Each structure stands twice: as C-alpha cells, then as structure tokens.
Image 1 (cartoon, rainbow, N blue to C red):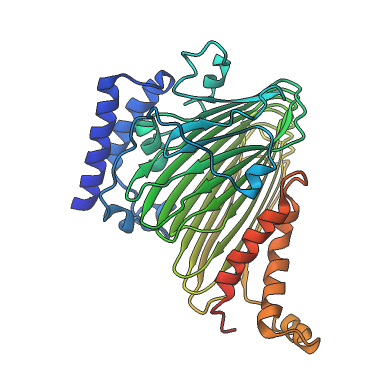
Image 2 (cartoon, rainbow, N blue to C red):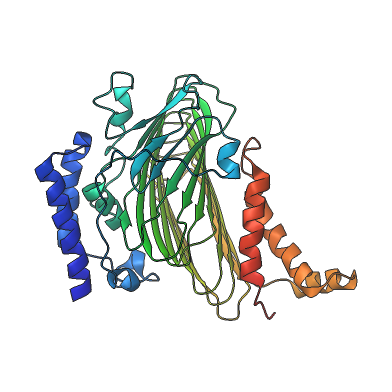
Length: 441
C-alpha cells in the first residue's frame, strides 16, 4: 500500500471511530460497521493485482486527500429540480449525505421515503424499513460497500406498501456538491408483496473539482412484487463514482434495473442479484457512454440460488476518444437451481481510435437442466450502413449520430413508459454527441 493510500484509509478509519464515539445515528448498521472497519484496515484500496480490479486503477483517487462525510446538519436544503423529478409523484433526496424530502409530495399513494437517521425516533414512520439495512450488502467483499458502511451518517428508506399499484414514478435525487469530499449515500428499499412501482434515481455531481461518491443500495423484492429501478448517472469531468446495488428477489418477485452512465471521470457500477425464491426474475439493462479519457466499469453477479428462475442481461457500451470500458458479467447457477433460464449479452461500439473495452461474460453452471447463453461483441460503425446513409444525402456527422443513437435505443425502449423518456433521450443524445465529436472513422 502506498503512502497516499495509507493516508486515505487512516483518515477514513479515524472518521469512523469518531462516529462510534459520538453515538451511532444508524444502530441497525452497528455490527456491519465493525466488519467494515476491519475490512478497510486489512485490505486497503483495491489494486489491479486483484482479478475483479484488473482493468480499473484507483491511483487517481489515492492522490487526493478526501474529507470525510459530515454529520447531517440542521440546514433546510432543497431538492434539485430536473425534468425527470418534475414529472414524478413522491420525491426525496440526499444532498451531500443529508436527507431532504419534498413537503408537497403525497405519501398516501402507497409508498413513503424516510430518513435513516431519524427513522427510529419518529412515530410516523414504519420501523420495518430498516429491516433491509445491512442485511443484503456484504461489506467484507466489496471495498466501497465497506467504505460506505463505515462512514454513512444518513440515508433513505423507501417502503412500498403491500399490493400498492403506483403508476407515477417515484424519484430520488442524490447530489454531491462539495469538492474533494467523500459522500456516502445509502438507500434501502423494500417492495412489499404484490406491489408494482418504479423508482428513478438521479445521481448528480454539479460543478467543478473532484468528488468521490460511494453509493450503496439494498433492495428486497417480496413475493409477487415488481420493481423497476432507473439509475441515471450524470457525473462531472472530475467526479469518481462507485455504485453498489444488492438485490434479493423472493418467490415470483421481479426486478428490472436500467443503468444509464452518462458522465464521470471514473465510474464503477456493481450489481449483485440473488434469486432466492422460485419463479423470481431479474432483468439488468445498461448503457454506458464514454468520451475523452473517461473510465466506466460494470461488474454484475446474478446468483440463481433456487430452481425455476429467469434472468436477462443486456449492457451496451459506446466509447469515443480515449475512453475505456469494462464489463464483467457473472452468472452463477447453483446445484439446486434446475430449470434456470438465463441470457446475457454485451455488445460494444468503439468510436475513438484509442477507445478500449475489456469484456468478460462468465457462466458458472452447477446444475444440468438449464438453458443459459452469454456473449459479447466489439466493433465499429458499419461502413456499409454509413455509405447507405451518405448516399441519401445525409452528412457524415449526422449519419454517425443516427447509427449510434439506433444502437442505444434498445436500452431506452426498455425503460417504463411512464418515465420521462424524452428527457432521458436528450441526455443520451448529448452524451453521444460528446463521444462522436472527434470520431475519425
């Protein structure tokens, strides 16, 4: 471990010790905090010598002396207003780690957001929300999960009522605005049995200067429930984002995750989905767009723990300039998981001459009555398609834009229709324009 890495780890451990001395605002995480501190002190920052970090370096993060997350203050903060949030019903957010709610949002529609730090002291909240906290994530296995667990001071609990049919999307905004500061947003979601809902999460890092965010989500989808998660990541040119999502689907529970990575200097997304009940299903969709020297890393694990479960996975990458992408998709089929149906695909489009993608689709099958497939492709824009468009009097830049947008459209089309797709498409077009601006093909 370098001196810079030791300095960062030491500062974070000291901050965690101060939290313990002052009293823990999140007692539900007490045991997990102890495990996290041990993991941080023993393991340190991940290095490229570790297989799961082979293609991603955290050296740039180690160079900066990050300030630890501050205690939630008494300041009255407001939620950022975006086109996606304005068309949502129930809204809440985390601004530099502090819970913010929208007083005008109705909590009578079958769901509620609550502050983790206050959930135990308020008589109006459902204490069951915190049953999720620290139960699904494993801080011993993932560095940024351990970092978040050791330092988180507040977060968001979302509980969706049993049999609730919520037609308007719920909206959670996460804003990291402090330069050279570490943010540790935390989310716990429980979709009660028979419910139907959609949660849109916007992760924003406005302004200049480096920012580091370690975001952890824990999700439990109960029997017969359906939940759509739409994660829109809009990071600044100097922002570092690590997002770890842990999900558990119970009997006939369905989870669909749509991850759109449209910015950030370095982004690392990890998804772990455990299909723990028969008939459970998960569908992971991702689109990542790189420009300049951005680095985007996706690591997914789908664990078929029982029989008769289904998983679908489609991640698409568009990389321009000197950007780099990483995709590692691991599917595990346990010995008792007969009748598993699993498909995984990772097509990638390289636009820049120096753009790179490292892709590793993986299948680990320990059962014999299954139907599984996986694959990956890497290529450039089809010259024949470009020629066809040019022959129809379409300019070279417009032709490339049409083809790249068509490549990405499949992911957009999978997003629930009641989410503002128009705004999402606008953001994607802007990101694609940046990726194709210096395309010399």
